[in-house]
Amino acid sequence: MKKTKYRGYFSEEIIHKSPCAGITAPMVRYTGDKDCDDLTFDWTCVAQPVTIEDVPSCADRDQFIFFAGTDLEDFTKFGAKVHVFLGPEKIEKVITEPTLVYIPKGVTYGPVDFAEVGAPIAWMNFYVAPQFSKGWKGGDFDDYIVKPNFMSEIFHSQTIVMGNPLSEQKWPKQQMITMGDAIGPEGAEF
Image (cartoon, rainbow, N blue to C red):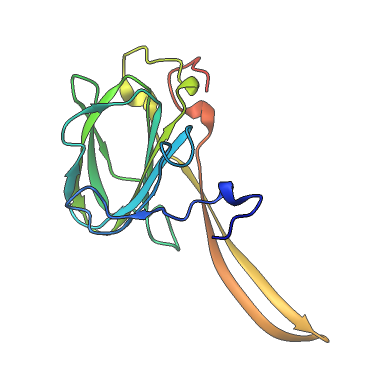
């Protein structure tokens, strides 16, 4: 891309091979060590059973993991069963629908086991800046797992020239909505 005033706002080198041998789809990766100190973002499709993060990891930043369907007509169609293990006790949570998991800095997680995959699902992984975390107080992990709401609309566009319809288009819009105050223990500040 040609160097311009706003050139620093664009990152082209974002398509990578997945580091996980069981994921054959390309991965979109935006990394904080290269582009932006406050964000690392991974997005890929999982199309077959696979285990990732088989060695539990612990980040010094807050982390959000999204699991969603890939049907463009209906993101709520989720054809998979994913086992996520949290904390040093490896408390197991089973995900069978679109879900957001918040992992505060300092909390171990893993493995993430895509045990059943009947239809491809999207797996998105975000690390955010440390200042967003107030730390983890321990306790039940249910406060850190949220089922997002989905809003679905059909957009309709029609071009009329001199009173006559020239073209018409309809397309679906799917939006996943998760309220910030729905994540974390009561009284947490995000």
